[in-house]
Image 1: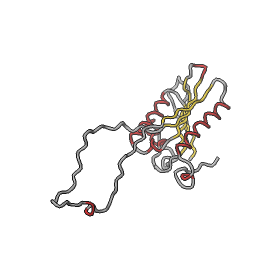
Image 2: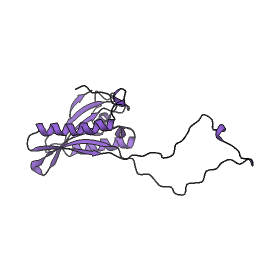
Image 3: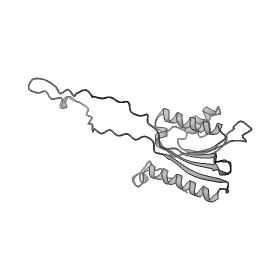
Image 4: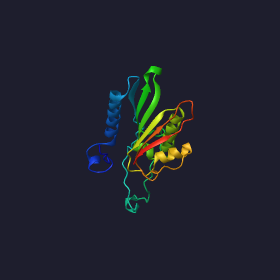
Length: 199
């Protein structure tokens, strides 16, 4: 199936990336449950993150002189100070994940497919949290697949993860999009990543 850039027209004008990511995770899980052996089961984990909007419109001009009006006494408008200041919640990025469990062992997590959202790549703290999550999954002998189709950011999360794991920079480090799989060896051996990449 060809992959379309849903951050650019004409796709961006027809469907939102949230609709694509939500359906995509569900379709992956449905197909996995058709093909996995009976002792495995997949499910979808979606967290929409934190949404914020400014509820006051603002207008920006090259010069503010035309908007400063003096009254007849030569006084300029002074807005009141806010009556209450609150710290906003930390922005939580949207997460779209398909998990695969081994049901014969009390739903042991064996694999995770991480569909990267724009809010994961748009700030350093979110990128670091995502890399830490993938690193932690690897340390727990969970196979991880990262599918990054976000084209409006040049960050390569897989390269960041490789650096965290102490591996050499991957050949696709300069690419902003990728699909990679990281498989772990037996639980008796320290996790070693075997890489399969699709640019």
